[in-house]
Structure formats: C-alpha cells, structure tokens
Amino acid sequence: MRVIPIPAQAGITGFESPAAEYTQLGLSLDELLIIHPSASFLCVAQGDSMQGVGIYDGDVLIVDRHETARNGDVIVANFNGLFVCKIIDTQRRLLLSCNEQFQPVTVQEFDDFSIEGVVIRSIRCHRPSSLLCA
Image (tube, rainbow, N blue to C red; front, side, top):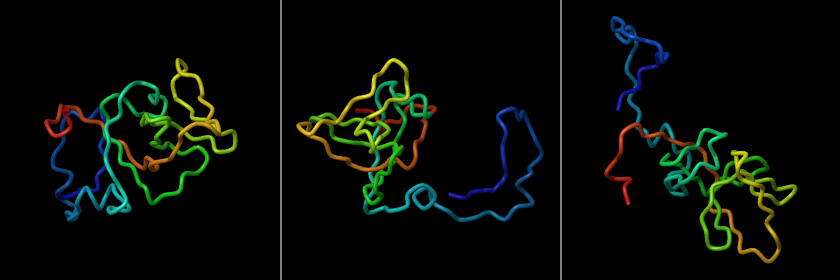
C-alpha cells in the first residue's frame, strides 16, 4: 500500500491530482497502526458505551498487550468473565463508559479482573467485511 501525505477534507468534491507532486511512500497498515505486532490483537467493538471517545458498534480495535495501562487509557479487560472495553480509572478502581446511559463500575477485590491490553487504535468500517462477520 502506498500512502500519499496530503490532507483531505470531508468537503472536497473534486480536484486535479494534487498527489502528483508527492513521492509515494511504501508503507503497510501493520507498520502504520501497530507498534508491537507480536503483542497485539484485533477485536470488534459491540455496543454504544464508548461512543464519547469515538468507538462505535462494529469498529475494529487494535489492542496492545505490551503497553502498560495508565490512568485514563481505553482498555480491553476481562471483568468477571466478560470482555469489556472501558476507560480505566486506576486511582478509584473504576471502569468508565463514555456514554451517559452507563454508570461507572467499581472493580472490587472479589471481582475476577484482568487487563487484556490497551486500545491504541480504532478503525471504522464503512462497508461490511466478510472477515469481521461472526
């Protein structure tokens, strides 16, 4: 895949090959989006609890297990047997949604909780993909 470094605005309706003046760069999406390939995985977001940070139902999440979760990071975690995508509040031990319809969840000592990785990117698919269908 070749990346041409030109800014594109959503309102563009037509233009004469502005890319002609740029040298094309060889770059793969893996190199562009994934920092630690051997420690990363993809998953598909479900639900609308993270819309406030731009993660919508059906988005592809790139999750990095090498990164250490910091306060305020978007994470994927196993919470009592369910995989969840939330913002971690490490100081108050909370899992936060980004939708007013969902209340914060306190991670208690008796909960089965493990952080699976930090969400480093999300990708929105504008057409369905047969590879992402269950």
